Figure 1 (cartoon, rainbow, N blue to C red):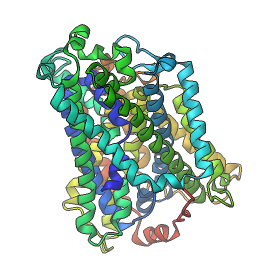
Figure 2 (figure 1 turned 90 degrees about the horizontal axis):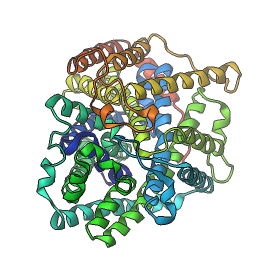
Figure 3 (figure 1 turned 60 degrees about the vertical axis):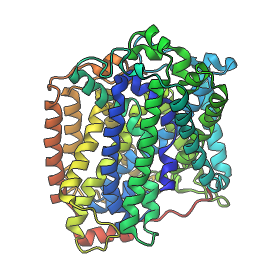
Length: 548
C-alpha cells in the first residue's frame, strides 16, 4: 500500500487544487470523489490480473496475453507514451514552482485571459530542458540510491501535504469562500457544472493525481494472503490519496483570502493571479503569513516531482526495451551498458520523446490532459483482458478474484472511456495521431530490418481494436467535449464548460456507454484460445533487473 502511495502523491497536489477550482469552482470537490470511485474500479480489475500474472509492466502485457501482438503493440505504445510524458510534466511542476523566486520570475508567463494556468517562457523551457538532461545523466550513472530512499521519500511526500491540511484547517478556514465567486456550482447551472466537473477530471489533473496504484499489484503476489491483501492495498492506497486530495481541495478553497476571490469575481479568473498560478499552495501560505510552511512547499516541489520524474524516465526506457525484445521497435533499444545494465539508447530516446511533448505544451496544465489520456487508454485494455482471460483461462489459479466481474469489468471499461472522452477532442485526436506514429515506427522497424523478430499480429483476436479506436475518435469529434484548449497550450474556462459538438449532453455519454459495451462483448468473443495464451505467457521476455 505504501509503495502505491508514493506513486499517487506527486505533482498533482501542487497544482490540482487550483486547476480544479478554476475549472469547476468549489464543486470540484465532487470531482475528486467521482475520480476516486472510477480509479478504484479500474484498480480492482488490475488487482485480479496482477494476481493472475504478476509481471513487471503488466498493464501493457495483459492485452498481449489475451488478444495477441496487435493489442500488445497498441496498449504497449500508450504505456510508453504515458511513461515518457510523466517525466516532463514533473519537470514542469518543479520549474513552475521555482519561477516564484525573484531571479526566476521570467520563467513563467501569466495565462491568456480565461486560461486555466499560465505557461513557461523561453527561459523556463530552457531550464526544463536542462533538468531533463540532468535526469538522463542521473539515469545513465545509475540511481540505486534513490530506490533505497524510496520509503523515506514517500513518507515525506505524504507528511508535507498532510501538514498543509492540518495547519490551514485550524488557522485559515473561511467558510464563506464556498459560496463566493459565483457559488458552489460555478460555473452556473447544473448541466454546466456537471460538464465542468467531468472536464476537470482529466483536464485539471484530478485523475492524474490519483493514478499510480500499480505498485501494490506488482508486489501483491508476494504477500501471505493475496486474496485479502491485494484489494486492501489497492483500495487503501487510493482512499488515503483521495482523502488527502479532497482535504487539500477543501483547505485550498477555504484558505484563500476572501479579498482575492472578490477581486477576481469568478473562480475561472483566479488563475489570472500570476503568483498563485505559478505556485498555488506556496502563494496561499505566504499570503496567510505561514512563510515557514511555504518554504517547505518549495522544497517539496523539488523532491516529489523530481523523484517521480527520474523513476518514470527509467520506466519508459524499460518499456521501449521490452517492446524491442518483442520485435516491435528497433533492436538498438535493447542495448544495455555492460557494467550498469542500463539501456542507454532507451533512456536518451525516452527523454527526447518527453521533450517533444514538453516543447509545444510548456505548462503543467497543458500537458496533464495528454498524460491522463494516454494513462487511461493504457488502463482501458485491462477490463477487456480480464473478461477475455476469464473465458480463455477459467481454471487458472487466481490469488485475487474480482467479485461480479461480468458487471464490474464492462463498467470499468465504460468509465475509462468516459475519462478519455472528457479529455476533449484535441487530446483524443492528438493521442490517435501519436498512435499512428507508433504504428508507423513499428512498420518501418520491420521493413528496414531494424528488428527481424516482428511477431504475427493475431488479426482475428484483435478484430475489435480498430473499430474501438475509430469509434472513440468519432464520438469525441461529434460529442459535447469537442474542445480542450490543448493546441492553445492551456485550456480555458470556456472550453471546460462549452458544448461544441452535435451530440446533446448526457446523450453523448449514453452513446459512449452503449458503444463501450459493444466493444467489450466483441473483444471477449474474439479472445485468444487457452493454448495461445499459454504460448504468449511462457514466451514473454522478462527484462533483467536494471542497476536502478
